[in-house]
Image 1 (tube, one colour):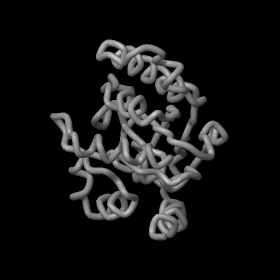
Image 2: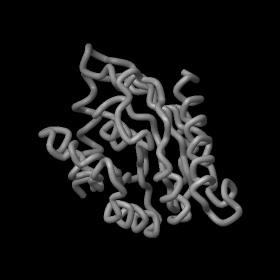
Image 3: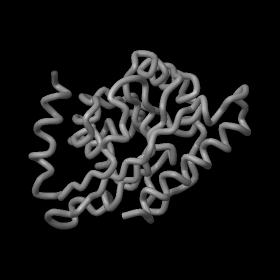
Image 4: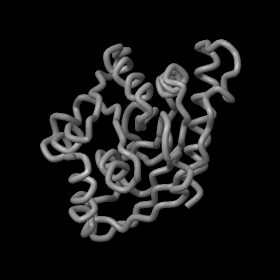
Length: 198
């Protein structure tokens, strides 16, 4: 209920700040478990994705975001899962897999932290591992120019959504650390393509 209200009100609140363009919206499956992965350049990223994508999103978000008043208020009510950085947060992983087992969408930023330059940094293997354990489809997203929100009126932000990837096609054998690294590198390349394909 509150999530739906926020989805209604957020585009109105963001209207003076942003002009949103969405590409590839039909690449998001209408049902079933999905891990949506995106580059990360701004604290606005989860807000933008939640406001403009059709399915309800649960987020893995660094716990520091919950302490920023306006952003924290939003992500808390968007059912975000707080993650402690710097160590494997088993509780966050369990909650994330549960989201997928319920057939929902989990949104993640595999870089683990914001990129201050806008370049896509190396992906951590957590997203691939959670998608594998949750038997989820992976949907890559390139967020373009979100880091400039607030620097002027009507900043153009593009949400570029790539074609879905099936985790069971990416990993047909038993999962290993090496395989997770390989998949993570592939996912990073897919997101870079989306960011560069403006």
